[in-house]
Image (spheres, rainbow, N blue to C red):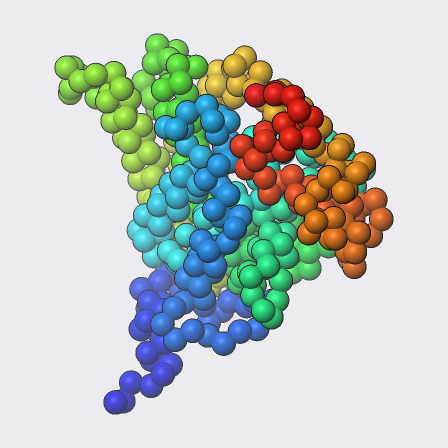
Length: 396
Ligand code: MG
């Protein structure tokens, strides 16, 4: 009977197990529209749940990074990628006593603003929008959670906490930062976001390097023999092969990749824990005053990881088969953009209304932004189908 509601709040939100420099919700910079604190759920738990219930999150299932969605059922999609990022980020957060709920919310939301067809789609849409402020997927993720999801009676967007929004906005140009108030400040002052945001960013890299390696090998676009030049892979593959000589190559690859992720994660935890021990960070505010990222690999692991990254860049992302698909994807985006921009009546009625009536975005710029919102929200298969419906021609 003596348990006061504030005690209950603390116990259930699990803040007592967090390091002092982690994101504690009592130091949160809050939500754009103030809300009551929930008794049994932390602020970041609620963010995560709002993200999972969003339409943009569900669409991640049919969006891809390297392989177009219909190329095979086994390839990663942005949904499975985001879940892998969240899982890696949570494991590291727990070891470093950082806020797991916040890490998970950032990880699950970090790719919401991506166009269909991965980077090819983003580049094409950015080209189309060049005279209208450009298109950047990080800013689009923020636009989705701040404005485009229409679910709640009292506000547009998901009204997420500052910390989740700060983590979503990984990069930002100086020009755009000027328009973002408190959220843009760190790009102007060149300071750091929360440790949880730094962590989600690296977990993203760990996840995509390794799953692209796995998907690339499975697709036959890269081969084990080529990977002898990549130390992270070759050392693990050699060890697995000598421990399990009878194992099929596919299972040796699985085991090697599992082991690479483990190596990267262990290095990241021990290097970051060492840095944190040698620094005198009292709260999240001290973290935000730092100019360099605190969550990082050791120098040795950093260069091993860069080697893997450059290998994928050269041999997978620029593979002629990937390039062919990217060119087709760019054509789809370009055709759709031109059609909708020149004749907004080709878009579904709610987008026509926004393009005509937008209070904030008027004129050509406003129309272009609504067209970009519509295209960016499409899944790979929806964009292909829209293109076929409008042009009556099959590209992919
Ligand atoms: Mg990602």
